[in-house]
Each structure stands twice: as C-alpha cells, then as structure tokens.
Image (cartoon, rainbow, N blue to C red):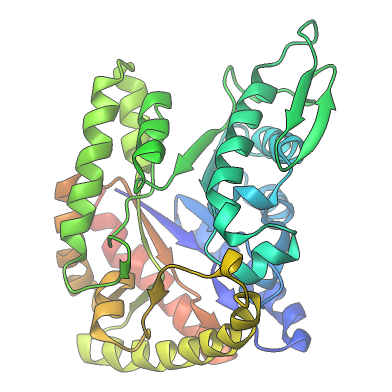
Length: 364
C-alpha cells in the first residue's frame, strides 16, 4: 500500500498567503525525506482554500525540481475551468519534468463560487467537463499531418499542428477519474488508469459506514478494469495507485491525545468553511448555480467517520487493514487540513513522522 500527502491547507486572510506557501514547501520536503510516495494538490480559486492551488501545476513543477523521486498528483483538477489546449500542454510539460511520475485527478468541480469566476454555471459543469476531456484526448492524439481540430464547445479554438511538447511516454500522463459516476468508472477502467474511490453516496455526503461505499465503488471499478483486457502490468500499476482519500489524517502517541487534537484541528477547519460558505451563498443566487448536495459539519461523527483517519499508530494500522483487504493501493492523507497556523503545522509534521515510523512500514 502506498501513502501520499494531500496539501489541503487554508488561509483566512490575504496576509497569511506568503507564510502558507513557505510552510507547504517545507512540509512537502519533509514528506520527501520520510519516504512518502506522492504529493497531491487540489485545484481551487478565490476563497483561501490552498491559496497556491490557483495554479497547482506551477507549484508541482517547483516541488518536482526539489523532489525528483516523488510522484505528483492532483486531487482533483476541475476540468470545466481549464481550456483543453492549456490543460493538455501543462500536463505534458509536467509529465516531462516528473519523468512520467504524474497522476492527474479529474472532476467537474463542487464549488459554484469558483465556477462563476471563470464564467461557468454550476449546472453546466458536468457537460463541460465531458466535452473538455473528449477534446483533450483528440488533442493528445493529433499528428501534425492530421486535419485541424475544431474546438466548438464552451471553450473555442482551432489547432492546426499539434500539442507541444509531446507526452513523456508513448501515452499521455495517467488521468484519475472519481469512480462514482458510471461514465467515470468506465473511463478509468477502459484506459487502465487508477481511480479515486469514494466513501459516500450522494446526496448524503458522509455517514458512519464509509467502508461499505468504498467496497461498492471499488468493486465496480475493479470488475471493469479486469474485463478491459489490459496487460497484468497495467492492471497492477492502476491498482497500486487506486486511491482512498482522507481530508484529515492526524496521529498522536495515544488515541486520547489524537482525539483531543483532531477536534481542535476540525474546529478551526469548520470556522474556515463557514467563512467560505457566506461567499458561496452569493454565488448560488440563481438556479443555474444552486448546489444539489450539502456537506455536514466537520465536528459530527458522520463527517469524521467519512473524512478523517486519526488515532495512535496502532489504531490507524488496524483501521487501514480493512482498506488494504478491499484492494485500495494508495492512501491519500490530508495532513494540513484547515488554517495552517504554527501549531497546526506542528501537528502535521507530527503526523508525517508517526506515519513514516510506524504505519508505512506495516504496509510494506
């Protein structure tokens, strides 16, 4: 089982952005020193959630120069907000800079405030994501002698020659759909790509039995992956990166200490989410941008069961054995969840060290 770090911190005010970037770099370098497999970055805009995630590809390329052995992933790129040409170009560049160690999570997005900043209506996001991914595949496959590719969806363009640079390998970098919708499951399985395996079923985002949902979605994906006729190497690679994500991972020496500290972390996290919600409500002022599902408070047992992994190293190992038995290949650990204060960063570094000392060796 692989272990990856998800950089998902927040700032509450603009004057905190500079220190956030400094602290995230240091935390990422520590993850590299301790032997984590990958660093994943989200794609967010305007609201202080991972302020540097307004261009995660730029930050990933900077970190890749300092961590040449590290894989880099995105959890996830909001595809409707990216012109297909720029999407493909930047993936190809980063594919070269990481020497093929790239995993590009793709999705349609969850935040109306971010959508309207790019002129996208929330209700149209799924359709635009599908047309952008289809356009991206056409661009990746285009040879110089082929006819021009006409982009006639939400994003416009006419590509005469090809995308430069070409991909690092024979195929373009691996994409990672979220294995929730049937089309996304099929896209991942048919291409031999890994997938994100959800721990809930909409419209209820959260619950006390996350493993039930993980088994359901993994089973659908796994069945289609095996039936797709890929080589054993392709299947093995896809499963090794098939990912279960935790928004908040926190370890301490004892379960009691971990519980006390994670509640402290989640209290600050919920304050940040509540601040963002006021702005998102303005974005939802018309039917085209109304959300159809809601996430409950992070301080509820349902949220914590779905999105948190916490406890002593022994407790965390016991919890993860069940996911290993399902077939999950990669655990994505949100280690800097919430506003990244000095104390929060100390908790995050504590978690990295305890994972590296006790948990990772138990799964190797």
